[in-house]
Image (cartoon, rainbow over all chains, first blue to last red; front, side):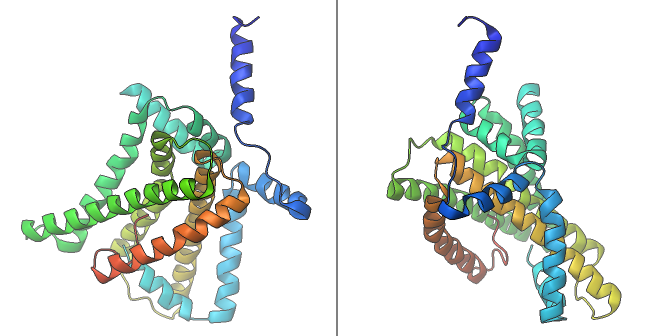
Length: 77
Length: 203
């Protein structure tokens, strides 16, 4: 059985999956699992809308200061 | 050369589609270290082009000086991050420290940085500052900041995964090591700013 290619690949995959123990954060573990689960596969589906919302929210608070910030960052390359 | 190139393309795409599994695989399989040469080629290309944009071609002396200062400072930042990871490993007593693995992981983590610098430079050429407070000016600024924030979030995800799989840290250790790493990053950024090398550090 140990010479079986599929078996060897399965063992390697199991080893890879268990390379770090599951992360727990006490009572917040379910919340962590939900957030981490959303970010594990194609995180852009979460971070793109989140970034746009965050910037819109920041614009409501700081107003045109964000235009100055963009100008500052754009000269920062 | 084809095998490293295909690995580079596969892993680069993986960082977008499935960063968790991609970084986990990279932290175990050390085959084809040469795959990261491609991303370092893009770093070289970026600094070569940005030096031309900043100083122009009319003075080769200033062009060489600018390129060398930017390029060396970026690799100083890279080496600093690897050294800080090693310091975290020593302080927090993790599993074994594999330098090659960390170099591969952190090299791939340069993707968001590199994309932000390319994005900023191209927009700088297309629509140079200053920005106005008109509606197009505001919309453009908000769009630019949103894209920048998206890339920053992506960078944080890759940073977290580098520590998670590269050093086998749990969340508490990642927070503790970050409290050690971030002050050094701030000091590095301030130093680069004072030396007029980077306004935004290439890390």
